[in-house]
Image (tube, rainbow, N blue to C red; front, side, top):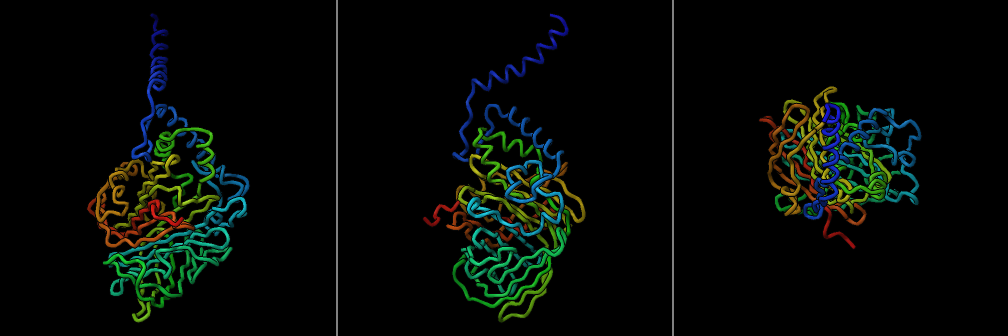
Length: 421
């Protein structure tokens, strides 16, 4: 056998063996019937999606049709929806309800500090002027305050053009730089030790906060690690229906860390000036159905040295059942994408269907490894969706990451097995 024939033989042999092995083996069953595993054709599918993601990222932002209705099926997975940052941060007009009954435009903010102050507030605008609304205040010397309707979150009469409903208003002042948050109305002082999220005294609360950016933003359409996305997609069974579902359910989402400052006045207590650091996000798309989520666990943390962290796992069965997300940011333009995480949903909260009291995991961003210890101080429960399809725990946490103290939110979501019918 000549040299050229030998080279050709060894070039052809690996793909032939790979194809034969793929035909002769079967795909492993999903773990617990939910979490897809790497099966036959995984390697081929991985490289196809990986190259597609990188190509779409090089193509940049979508050039035409700057609306949710016209672009949502064509963006994501490497390609941005908008070219201008001003368009990303504004309230998005929802498409016609007749064609897109489950469209969403949602904003979320959290903040915390070493003194034990925690702030969480969110408005998810839905069709027909409905909205899922959430606000928590944890104030030392007072306790845990939540909106009167929590653990239910569905409110009517949301402003059709902005995030404003039920006395809560969240407005963008300068895109990616500044937001204004205000609330004037009743809040319920709940008994966190007894985990009673339905009873408690109603108190008048006035809150005026200003959020200013500390970091750049992370665009989930373009900034997620290509290898992690390829691994996630390659685990699933491919079909035309599978890719149609990916397009249909895609949501544009970006996140950013910042500082929240302002005053909170609670009936019967002195006005408090607060300063907290945390994450905010903005999500929008033609389709969000809480009933389709099996569960997720998202950690939004900041450390005493200024490091800001997102580390998450998400399970949409049959679509994105093993999606890993995350990044590390520091004040300024420093941004590194998460490339590996040891957080395992099967062994962390899958059996109890609740957020654990404490646990550990590790993750890698760039060449840096982060070892994270999480301690949950309190975790109010609430529901999302029109019929309470999802049950969530907003965990107010203390963390130690690589020996440094930190604070933040660990949000756990589960499919609500006791939802309304």
